[in-house]
Image (cartoon, rainbow, N blue to C red; front, side, top):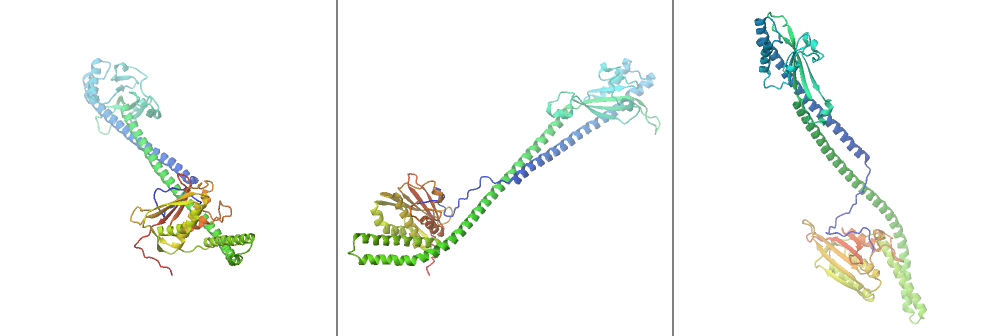
Amino acid sequence: MNQSNPAEPENCDCRRQESPVESALPLSYARTLSWLSLVVILLTSLGLSFFISNSARQTLLTRQEDFARLLVENLNSQIFRRFALPTILASGRIALRQPAQYERLDQVVQSVIHGLPVERLRIYDFSRLVAYSTRKEDLGRAGLSPPNLDDVLHGAVPKSEIISSIPAWQAPFRAPLREGAFVLRVLYPLRGETLRPGEQAPVMGALELTQDITGDYEQVLVFQGIIVVMCLLSSVILFGLLLMLIHRAERILAERMHKNRLLENELHNNEKLAGMGRVVASIAHEIRNPLGIIRSSAELLQRRMDRADAGTSRILGAIYDESVRLSQTVNDFLDYARPRQPRQNLVDVNLVLDQALAFLEGELRRHDVSVERQMQPGLRVRGDKDLLYRAFYNILVNGQQAMSGPGVIRISACLEPEQGDGPGCVRLEFQDSGPGFDQAALPSLLDPFFTTKDGGTGLGLPIVQSIIVSHGGQIELENGPEGGALVRVLLPAADPEAPEVQDE
């Protein structure tokens, strides 16, 4: 008994095919594409996230600047109307060193900026000194003015700038930020009002408004971080999906390439076997006729020489036995080289096994081999009764020969229903109590001309496999759980409603 692929099926599936997938198929272009796609997605996502977040930050800062300018313009108007003009009319000049004027100006400024996010407000005169400040310690001090104060005092366009105590690129990594980390400063010329239309209002000084925008800037950084994290997360998800698709495509391609190689190898082997079969069939046909003459002649001489000496009788018996053995070998070669297309008759599996065991009963008794059967009744398949008889006969003979003496052959057969509405599968198992299959030779036992017996042809099990496969089934060889060789045959169960094909 011999095998090519050991397998122990849990369910009977006569049409299944075990197709191992190659463990590794180098598709470097696919892997390179996946990593390049990750880089492109990450760069695109980061660029888009920074663009969106920077736009949001710029919008926020623009609104803060617009608010500061509106506040400064309102202050400018309120200071002129409520302080400068009444003071000039009452005193003739503005002198903020006088406590009364300073207090009056401070009241005007505080009424305007009360409740607003203003950190500090200063008024500079033309000598670059601090004429007014919400912080009294700054009064009269020099050196506090920004570099572009002179341009504003001469009526230039108002200036605004962000002053930070830390570099902007470090801000995301140093959150939460301390107060005063980012300050918005706006310089605006302090003007009066024109008395005549078309004239430009005179500049009386410069207003410096300072706002702490650290909280707003921190919110922008949080928003920017959320955008970056979401973009990175979506990039990783997209990359994972892309990588999964590439790996799936790689696996499918590997399976197809493996199947193509198997088909190519099978086609190549079939071509070699076909050529070999033609040669073997031609040689066997030429041998068969003279071999038949030798056999019949030896049989005739045995009958005529009843009184011959014992030595001559033994020689004639040996000639006859060897001619029978050679005739069987020639028949095996012809059967394998020119397989017969099976008929599609309704065949009772139990009946075929009964006939094979009846023919082998004497041989089994001589070798003290018993048979144990556990057969489900009513097992029927579509096929050729003669071919199935020969397949079962060869399996039983191999089991008997493998034990080389007393032993047991256990035969079991059952119907395993298929999932769905199909008729199912007839499962037969032949197990002997012999030494079992050689694990090293197991993958090659179904190959033609491979044999572990002295003087064997290596065609017994290949012929059995050819017969079973031609009936739409499969054969599996393995060692039984308690020792001994196990041959499993799976055949499609017959559909009682299908029409029977009669022999011509």
